[in-house]
Image (cartoon, rainbow, N blue to C red):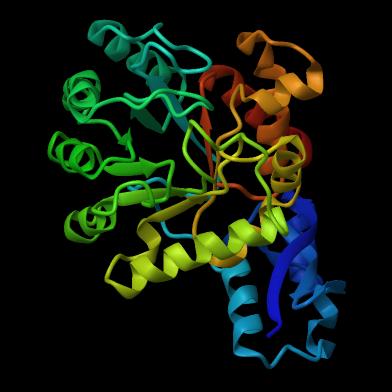
Length: 351
């Protein structure tokens, strides 16, 4: 059986985007006024992978156009995304990282005390964060497992103190998901995409919070031991598609789901670079996208530096790569710098 994938190409921005859409030689990406695409890469995956680039004004000539699946993919690329927790997705949103851990790869121990954590969360919000993502268990490569009781001690009081804001609980444990929701978390961000704890899907279906599905291969202890894929982009696309379909089929509204290809979670350098370069393909799944590339080791491998705070430039470069492909959410440590970069980028490309 041959499966069809569609990736948007030839992006235009600002007044150029509007002009090309008006001429009907481009389409709005996810319904946005400020970004359009003039071509698609159609990927056919069977025993072999075949690729073909088709201009938007030639789509009617494509022989598979009458396929319901192909029509759905194109529809997903152009359909305007609904607001997420009241946040308009007409421009990128920022998710500030708050690690209440002694061992996170970038800022472990820095905000381990509750008062420090709450103070830093408020700084992130003042700097422009739209969401605060609160985690009590490091999921960096090689990280040790944290007990349920210890994780609760770390995050629940902080979530409760910040419940008037848009708070995400970064956890892969069903029991902590429940307590986080009861203490005010609006979003569950599971790095395992509900794979780690067999009860987590039931929690999501019962409480129906917003959810971020992050792709990960293996556990923190094993995920970086020679990860392999047949095709990293298409394999992760298929995984996320199955997860979306499973949740929607069982009653969760699709507009509650954000998808994240999981940079650094069971991927080598080449995998990470391919995912970021091709991240636009995931729009065809019809959900908002999140990119979590902040300060991650792929930057150090490219730049040959080990100091995580020296990775801000690499973080911003990856964020702009995503933003120029229409990614809606960015999970970052450095909110102020990222917000500034996005603002300048928008001014430059929207002339």
